[in-house]
Length: 320
Image (cartoon, rainbow, N blue to C red; front, side, top):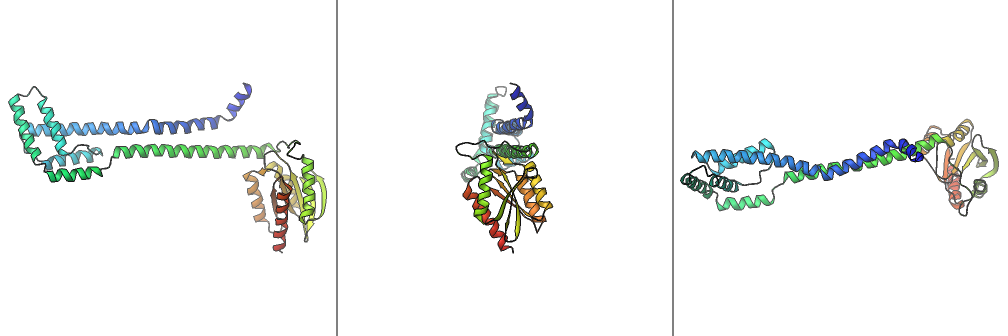
């Protein structure tokens, strides 16, 4: 329980970040579409009630009203509320007609007169216009649906971006922790992995087999130098590390300092891999120093290491 508590405290930032990503993803899919739809529906209701009131008032007072007028009313409300009204003028008039017929406070004769007036207006809604309206409706854009989809997609994209950022940060934190913490635990001997000393001995033999001359064991562990060697007039310091996981800056820096203080090149042999910061540091060292080079050899198999060592000698020979 105590171990879990310390782990939670140590990773609280990442935990809260993960909760934020999950929450953003959930709300984007579960709530945003409904929220956008609710806002749009509210605006449509306002537009519809406004159109119904205006048209009923004009019809009741027997004012002149045409289909073109109704189209203008609809267009004006759409521009005002930035919505797409779902009914055409004929459908709107049908609803106005139904509203009048259901109003029992208006005498029946008056309602019948209004009904005939509305029917007269609807009769001007020609078949040609109906056909063209239907064709346009097929291609009509549903802005509510588009807005919901775009809002949801934006939320999903932000969630994915947050998840990727959190993953990158977590990996960066792990590598930084390795750089600060220092040496990782050395592999214990087993069926598939040689011990550290066996690995070091194998690297020494491989140096000779790859073509290096005067391979000598230094044993200078304080400065990370395990071997010195020569080839084609160039001298090398070799550091050998067998790790369970990534190798960090604390293992590189002593050896890098020793190499930079000498006139020799460096070969850093690591059984697993290195952090991005180690790679960057080695690249920067090689860019800034034209006379000395630091070579990185990664692998735990003899053939793999030998091929990389041979490649180092080939590059050195071609540069001369």
